[in-house]
Amino acid sequence: MARTALVTGGSRGIGAAIAIALRDAGYRVAANYAGNDEAAQKFKAETGIPVYKWSVADYDACAEGIRKVEAELGPVDILVNNAGITRDAPFHKMTREQWNEVISTNLNGVFNMTHPLWNGMRERKFGRIVTISSINGQKGQFAQANYSASKAGDLGFTKALAQEGARAGITVNAICPGYIATDMVMAVPEKVRESIVAQIPAGRLGEAAEIARCVVFLASDDAGFITGSTLTANGGQYFV
Ligand code: CAA
Image 1 (cartoon, helix red, strand yellow):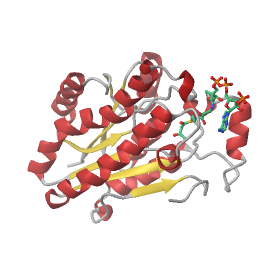
Image 2 (tube, rainbow, N blue to C red):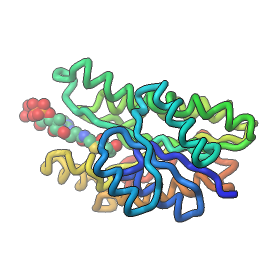
Image 3 (tube, rainbow, N blue to C red):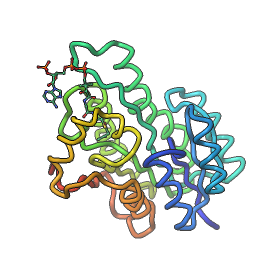
Image 4 (spheres, rainbow, N blue to C red):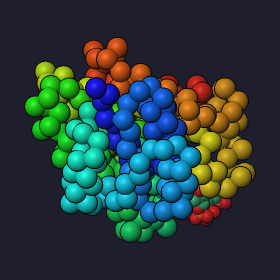
């Protein structure tokens, strides 16, 4: 029977590309989203992938949402922690709200989604956790103390949990995309974006589908010995 995959932030941008790629690879897929009903309904109509609305920043909503997905599609074998937000500001202008919103979604959200699924994966002796971190969690980024901290936190989470999951057949990995042509990157002021592209040896932004293919690989049986790793896909912009 096909395995079930749940993709957070799965109705737009990188998450939508991941959901589609997993569906095309033969998985049953559920796409979570937090707020944009119109985009989610359009995504569902175009792809046939069911969408489920809740905020990953809310632990109880995650547990309830996961229960609903599992009742409809079966136990979740593959979790893709993709949901993420930016609230960019130089630190001297950054508010507590901007800090807390980003940490709540990008870091606490990964805990909130993984924790309710963990015991089931342990019992079934199979699981794949793939978390979408960022180049800016690796190198830091001006005006992103909140975002860079959250994405670096995702990498620590991944490395710690990989050690706990290994004997239970659960792999835990992260992907660090560079700058990908999504709404999030297009929201960066044009001049800043141009200067960023100039720093990418590949000479272009990445495509969401290029990140999705990384996820399909890490979710596969072929990747069973890969855990705790960080897969970098940034056009050569930064090497760890
Ligand atoms: N390095 C050094 N200095 C920088 C800088 C940088 N990268 N970017 C801006 N500055 C400087 C400016 O030149 C300016 O200096 P002056 O005051 O001397 O002119 C100052 O910092 C900015 O001051 P402002 O008052 O103009 O700042 P602001 O409050 O208007 O904020 C901003 C502007 C939010 C920083 C805006 O420039 C911005 O959004 N920058 C992009 C940040 C970024 O790269 N975000 C990544 C988003 S994509 C993403 O996160 C996805 C992913 O995972 C890769």
